[in-house]
Image 1: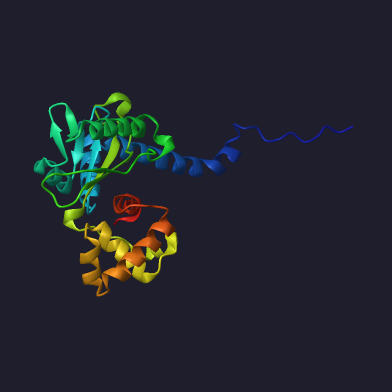
Image 2: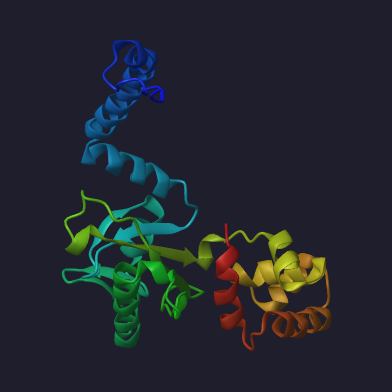
Length: 240
């Protein structure tokens, strides 16, 4: 009985020659990617993050678990310099009210050490201010975990500060899509998020105060909110 044909040896030059160009190409690509990654320095990362934060229209900063900002955009620095509602102390970020400070630091801890859970349950929240005509909206979400941060486990939280006095922009189409608001209701909600009173919003929209209050009742019902500050916090999810 004839013996079955033997498979070609793995070290056969003829079979090896078929794959050598492919293997060389793959190795070259792998080496190139490794070289590119090794060439990225912490300074490059900081430059990229700084540029990204500056694109935000609201205050934005990367904060360590102890409440110390690691990086902040100009809008955030301007809010902190006012020292109204929230400020930067030697111990880190603090609010005017001790209860707000405790809440802020708890949310930072949750965002940093449980990033898989996403935005903490009690975020965003309202910080009352004395000098400003409207409150400050504070939102905390998990930030990037990068080796260039001098923090426990190299983690940060992204802290967003919304100053209603500066005029916030709300995507009215998103309000209509998410909550089923009419165009008139979405326009009113947008004005209220900007810190306008119901009377001022009505004047700007050229509607009566009675109509505005009717819209507001329907907005409360559709967004499952009961007060204007609560509505503003809910709308923060879709502020540009």
